[in-house]
Length: 290
Ligand code: GH3
Ligand code: MG
Ligand code: MG
Ligand code: MG
Image (cartoon, rainbow, N blue to C red):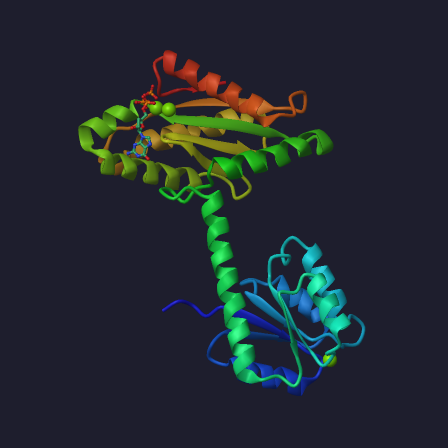
């Protein structure tokens, strides 16, 4: 069975929290907060809530202000907020919805209606998360896809000039992959790609971006200078050759470049890495070219 989605209930009046928790009991993993600051802290705690039920009238930070803060924090901005409040004037409801809430429920609550509305928005959120994941990941390997790579690379490249940090780009192309498919079948080829992807993921750092950008082409962004990136690429190549993915002898050609702000367009660096791979191919494959 799927794990229950988490719903965060926020109300300064204990009884209100209890009534709401009772109404959603068994349907969701319930977390509670009794003021705005607790809400902001709970909203950032993993697993992130799939929905926040937010009271408006609370001391110190009122619900409107809490909603504004949630929406301006990238970690919590995508969590749907439903206001649950005694403030039933049109202006209040309008204000709540304009702040980015997905719905507005007035007290006293009607449990069946609350359950239905919560259910709708939790489902919408799950669908949205799924689409977002699919838009940025490669289905076969689970790695990031080209779109995510390009987005994150542009951001990292901008940081290189601002903070004098490093960014190296490693491109990896499987050698004679067509032959692997021809001799062992497409399914076996897929298995090679999956095991290769798992190896790359397991042998890179959490802050590295590992992406599959084409059929048998991968790119890794490393926030280190050329020398370290070259050393790490050589190590990856050894690991790949030793692994024998899907029981086959597989090698790769790797190209490594260090990006800098002189060319703020990442496609320039991607092309340079691609040229290095091309050189590696012409040097006989199974090597790293810098
Ligand atoms: P080189 O050493 O010069 O890189 O040769 P290669 O055969 O690896 O390069 P080429 O670009 O000629 O062939 C790549 C092959 O990858 C062709 C294509 O059928 C195969 N391919 C692309 N995507 C997939 C995939 O998702 N699964 C499988 N099994 N094969 C794929
Ligand atoms: Mg209140
Ligand atoms: Mg290729
Ligand atoms: Mg190839």
